[in-house]
Length: 224
Image (cartoon, rainbow, N blue to C red; front, side, top):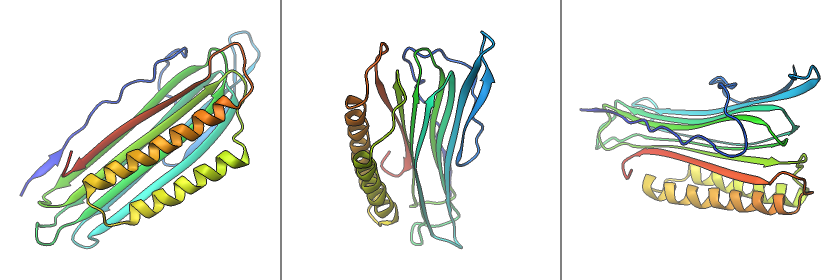
């Protein structure tokens, strides 16, 4: 019997944005763009997004698998705080009666602005608690798209993302081993990144540079 937990820190998003304190709390599925008072006294918008997927498997429910695929488009903002998190727990099972817990969260956020203050957090954590032989996987994929002028994904790019979402749902529900699931989730994330880069390439250009940044954070047992 053993209890395992491992946390890794995520790399902060670094670009032309200025880091500020975290805007987003750890609440599942929250997205807002609210007016704030700019330093000059004029109105400004602050974008806040928080997505969190949590799965738990135990002796009463041996398999639990959940995923989330969110697209949040904010337009022009003065500040943005975005958080994406996946947590998976397996507990109380045995090697001959193993549990399987999978949590995958894909978060896409777009915003516009020349000097947007940005704080982006992307976390995952997988824990086996007295669960020898269990499969536990948590994966967080965060895509932050910054453009000088507001970006609206067109119908073609939305269809491509919807197809990836359907395949993510199927993968999450599948019974492939955790190590292979990680590989396939990475492949889907690479497709999302390519779709977003293509969308940005077609967007109107401004003085500032377009930017698509992907954060990936995976944690799992076994096959780390």
